[in-house]
Amino acid sequence: MAKKSIDIDYIVIWRNLNQVASKSEEEELQRWLSSDRKHQLLYEHLSVRVDKDILFTDEHIEKQWEQLQNRLIAKPRVLYTKWLQYAAAIILPLMIGLGVMYLSDKETGSVETAHQIQPGSSKAMLQLANGESIELDAASESLIKNKEGQVIGVDSMAILTYSAEAAEEQEFNTINIPRGGEYQLVLADGTTVWLNSESSLTYPVAFTGDTREVFLTGEAYFDVTSDKDVPFIVKTEISDVKVYGTQFNVMAYKDDKISETTLVEGSIAVLYNNEELMVKPGQQAQVSTAEEGVVIREVDTHLYTDWKSGIFRFEEMSLKEVAVKLSRWYDVDFFFANEEVKERTISGAMKRNTDFSLFMSLIEKSAEARISIEGNNVLVEGKY
Image 1 (cartoon, rainbow, N blue to C red):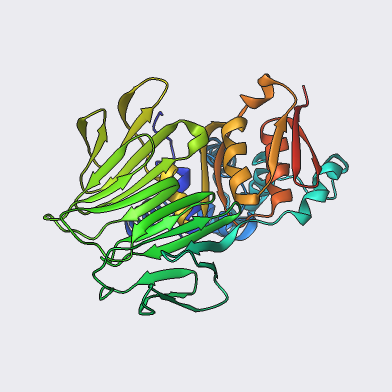
Image 2 (spheres, one colour):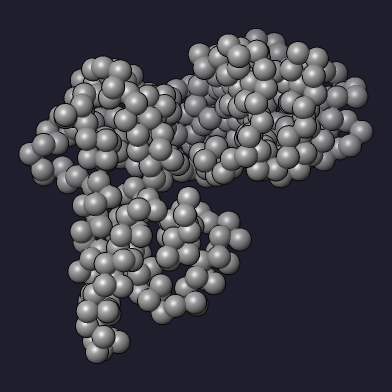
């Protein structure tokens, strides 16, 4: 991507506006703001006049910046205090350009019924070694016990935490995340796991032996406690990931027939067909059952890990791929009128708690599509 004249990525602005920016992104924003007073004006108006849930893209912010520049050049003697008024005049069209469709618009009748569809929440079902099932959610607190009745963990505030003093006898628990759910888990060794919708993790209540092995179906982000003598291994149906202490994301849903392991920091190795391939920070290893091989590529890790921070991030993503993610989170089923509309793309960032009707309105505008909703079924057609 060519370097933009405003010299900052739109996602840095968006993440700061939504208070989910990393320390480095906060510092980058401050450098950008201090470099030009007009940057401050643009940012202030984005924070006041623009709904922070809407879709931000490079092109839209760049367009507004160019319009601001043109207005200032056209009227060089404008008083400094009037700059905000100029910015205000161009930010309002930004909301339309970003694809916001107000529900009062006559074209959104089919989307209005989407109000009954709610975003996902923290919920899970825990299967204990003795066969007992415990429903987990953010509203209640539960004590988790082993077969002998010893307390080995506590579930509270949507986080299931296992005790480091758990019994040494190895027994396994399984946490299942339904459609429209997510949950956080802290294992006995201190490793933290964020589990996405339609995912399942089987793990020992206490780690013994010379490895720490867990079994994943679906998607999870791992922040692994370092132990060079006892590697952490994530096993999936397609491949395994060997870790010593790091942060990474694994996506390995059964229906996808592909696994993606994205490394944020540290060092990992992907194990496949008796090969051990090293992955560096900022890289992703893709393993496909169809291709029967491993592809390692450079990626923007935020695209694959922002979900754990409550953010959907799309970069030229096809509606077919978007539908898969939204189906799991909102517990809906998408249907497409034809193959062509499946391949239409959208870009931007949205909060995962965004109202479904707003999301559908954005897709209608951004992808020039028409959406009809009946119950939990969503039909997507092309307008043209």
